[in-house]
Every structure is written in C-alpha cells, then in structure tokens.
Image (cartoon, rainbow, N blue to C red; front, side, top):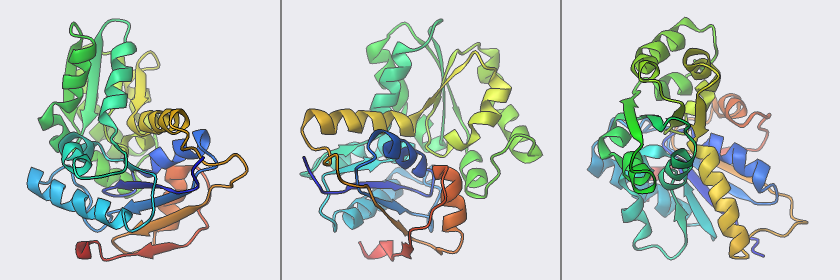
Length: 271
C-alpha cells in the first residue's frame, strides 16, 4: 500500500476526463492535478515548445512526493513521453500506448479512425502502436484543431450549431471510410462524445484515451502493491497556470460532479 498521491497534468482542463475515470477505478487515491490553462492548447505548438512546457509541468508536480504521474494529454504523450520518463525515477504514464493497444483489439472490420491535435497526428504515434499489434488494420487519422478551444469554452452539447458544424467537417471523411472504432486521441474530446456519436452513429466504438490510461494505471498500482489503502478517502488538489475564476464551473462539467475544493494559480514558467 502507498499513501502518496498521483500527479496528473494536461495543457488545459481536458485531463480532468482522466481524473474522472481515476475517481471511479481508484476512489481511495489522492490526486494532484495541474492544468496549464495559460498556454492551452499544446497541439498547435512546435515539438521543442511542447517538450519545454511539459518538462515544466512535470517539474512542478515533482515538488510533491508522488508515486506516479499521468500525462493526461495526447500531444505530450505522443511527443515528449520518452524525454520526460528518461531521467525520472517515478513511473510516468501517457495515453497513447494503452489506448492504441485497446484499439487494436476492438474493431470488427479492422478500420480504425484517430482524431487528435495536429501535433499528435503528425507524430503517427497511435498508428505505430496499432500496426505493431495489428499489422493488417486500416488506419485513418484526422487532426481536429478547433475541438480543444471549443471544449475549453464549453461548446460541447448536441444542438450547438458551432460544434456540430465543426464536428461534421472533421468527421465526414472518417465516416465515409467506414471506421468502426474511433480513438478520441485528446483528453478534451470525451466531452464531445454525444456530438461525435450522433454524427458517426451508434455502431462506431469510441475509445476515451483518458479512461484507458486511468485503467492502465489502476492495473499497474495493484500489480506493484502501490494502491492506496482501502480505508483512505481520496482527496483532490487543483492547480492552474491562468485565472482560477471559471475553473469550478468548467471542472464540474469535465468531472461530472460539483467541484468544491479550492484551486490555486501557479507561475509555471518558474519551474
């Protein structure tokens, strides 16, 4: 058993979808979350900038005595995971590997769609893992650069003409290709599940990358006897790099519960 908390970070609030799943599968764990809301999105940045930002994110989280870090960001997972894990002494988990492995096991017709940020799609990270596991799979990738800012601004619900129009434009090609599994390769995208499912149809399986990494971490902690004791009540600490003003309202949407814990703004550039 291990009482230490788990650190989670993302470019904004999308990583809270991973926290939501962690709360379900690991309700006894303490979570420290950092959202780099002052520099969101990462998906349009250069590789060097993404590595710089994510290194600062990890440096901040390492000021706490953690037992693991979850990179709840598809862009950082695809571009910087190796850089972040190489010098570190604690386990760091990204979303790409567990989600891609699940995708390789899922499709009925072997046609898998991948939606993510521009930076993630450029790396081909999801494709590399899937082809290792299922070489015959047919893969179709599409960057969706407007999804993150729309989600961060609360434009997530069916009936919102803006998000529905953008989603239709992005997803049209994937639907035409007949994919039966669609990877939501950015942790912001699960907030668009209803919009995406309405367009793609109920027969298409949607894979939530935040949920997949949460399940993977839960298995790891149990296997290595690092899970929190069963009598511990999990608590949460929230940090952002920009204004805290709208955090509680948006975080409540991402987490599916009212967020009442305090949130603190930090100067991430100092790390």
